[in-house]
Length: 50
Image (tube, rainbow, N blue to C red):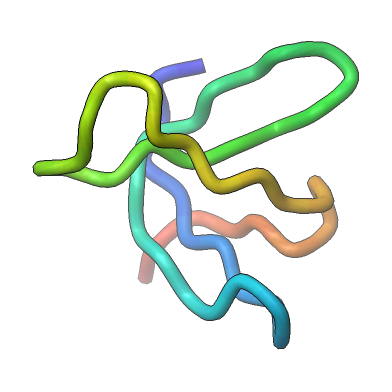
């Protein structure tokens, strides 16, 4: 939780943000977005930035 990750999938697109874990889901919160605005991804579609 709180690690910077990249989420990439054909439906949500590619986003960079901090990890938010709300079991059983993993989401990303992007900088500059409202506090409750989270995009959820399958954990297999998340990776660390290069």
